[in-house]
Image 1 (cartoon, one colour):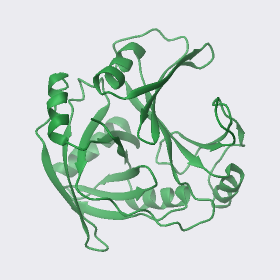
Image 2 (cartoon, rainbow, N blue to C red):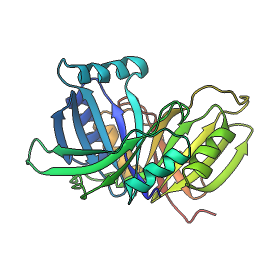
Image 3 (cartoon, rainbow, N blue to C red):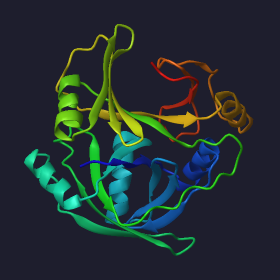
Image 4 (tube, one colour):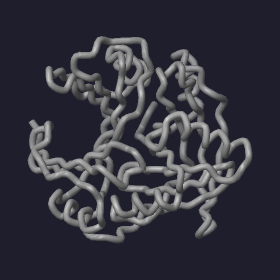
Length: 281
């Protein structure tokens, strides 16, 4: 039923500063800008998913809801939005799984620059039923425009998005058995805890449980994102020249990978860049 991770939502207090930060990080320009319904939105569409920046806009009730969300969680990852080829079937499945979906709604967005429109149908599962993580499901009616490259060594795509869980068995049941994502890895290590990888289109939803922590009934939360790069050294040089705080390149946990951490310019999202150097075992 789920075909891909359509987009992730990142809350920011300043939409223009956030857009400038992600243009620097990605080496790509925004592909969509929209103000309406109390929020300002800027989209970056890469090869396999979209990052949507959202900030409050205006003084109405909807804008105040966005401000309340910012006050509650601060800047950072706010939602995962999965795509499905049939929203009606997805809605029925969510109901059968007792995830209490909202009624399906038709949505349209107009790009403030070009006047082009996008439309889709969506629903949202009850956050309490998804253990604190906001999950949306949508059926797009058209394909979004891609973000144009504006710098050398751009970021082409997402590698994985991380959900931090307080109860790994509960999370495995939600993302695997109930939502139907394919579990590609379930591995534990005394130093970094338990990691579960769920395939979702051309990327991974990673569920992580910290080492030494007992399972609890507390809420899960969205944690961070890993982006793919073709040349870690070239991307690091570009980001350092732009003034970002970037770690040294190091060998990754995944066999055949090199990684680096971006410590600024991400609107509060813990961010890792990964270069695949050889076929993983």
